[in-house]
Length: 618
Image 1 (cartoon, rainbow, N blue to C red):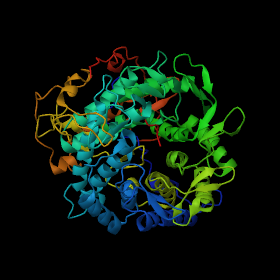
Image 2: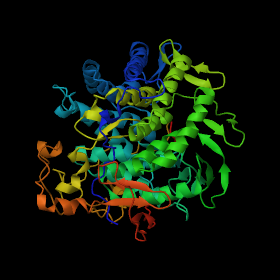
Image 3: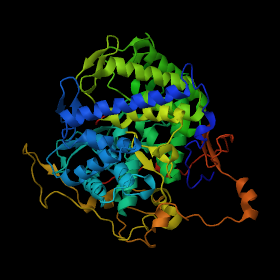
């Protein structure tokens, strides 16, 4: 099976095709506009609350109208909100925010931060905003902008590189931005923590012409997948040194969720077939062992014995991922089941016991999570079924009447009694509000960057907009060798620690990055680069022109005589047992199925060569 070199299944259905007089049960075209405007006001109520009462601290305390530092003390909510400002067309605030961050943000601070959270929130936010602010085609280019956010992103990523110095290639869960990894740092990390770095690190490699970021992120995925069970399931937590699973519960929710998400999205964005192969095998295993139609359960990764009949709120992203994979029918059934829990309580609790059909003790909160809304948006985009507008309207009403508070929106500490808690996560503005606004804007007749912009976008797990520009997605179309797009053919690894071992504020010894660990890391030869110790590439091609980077006159003329022949050979790939479709044909009406081959030579199956040498989502 030969997969398409570049796949962007973003449902190229004309947006106005389904806009009629009545869009849902009582949701008219005009009401869709009103709901969209209400969501916009929701965003500014929370964003203004943060800017007036919490900035430049990380997050808002919406009941007491104060601020708190929850990640690194570097204006987390502002960074996480940047591309939402751009999506809403707020040029003035987007420009002011980018300029402030460029002038004031620094990462040479003595803070120990989560690799996972820092990557998806801070690194992803900076990269997404950079790609918007630097490009004329987005309509939001800032004339005075000089790549300040990109430089910050590169600096931050280099400070996280010491975390990847492990025998397995799977990173530590945390790193000190000034001193590296503390010698007492836990060796246990989550599967999501090690496997949700490929999009942000991969794009950074393409923007900086330095392959190291993409290589370490891919090594981490390979390190996890190489240690899967014989039935192709992965556990929740793993020892990054020994490679032993410390928690063997397999599921699609807490601690694992975005591992699956980034396998498919890395293929969609980069066209790297290895991610597709892994996703196919992993998806088949999930649907065989975890799917109890329409719910998903947790099982032992080795025996598939039932461990936990629980709906975990983080599972709610799954129907949206199935839409991207083309497996719509089970997505519809699962979303209906998940939404029934929301309707029962007004919110989704962190845990809902499927055996007792009640809220799981100790998991009664709703921290303004976006996952159910995300899936609602994707299913409406795929089907234009009015039920999803109705669902969006109910979700909006619950947030307005149950979570809105003095200066923003509050966590719900108990979904049964709707008790408010004085905290607002940054992802409320990065994801929750964004997906709600996109849902109603799509129904009202969209005019935004995502639906009508110059590129197709992949959303990161934090909801950040990652465009499929030629510079990001078509590297192999321009150069024969991975990394040959680099103007400087040397791999660069800068460290921000001193030459000799130092101690942090507690006096404990710390570990530093050095180039030797890169040559020891496992990087399989299936990639055009044979290993991280490669310093010079066999081929070097010129940097991309502006036209190539942004897709202007990039495609060569097509011979009309060969058009029919080419159209009959459009390639599709499929996951057996469920018709997961990854189709290079943009026509959504085309049947999404095709032949499937076994991958006996899957390089990720080969045990990695070890060298000497979490945090769960949210």
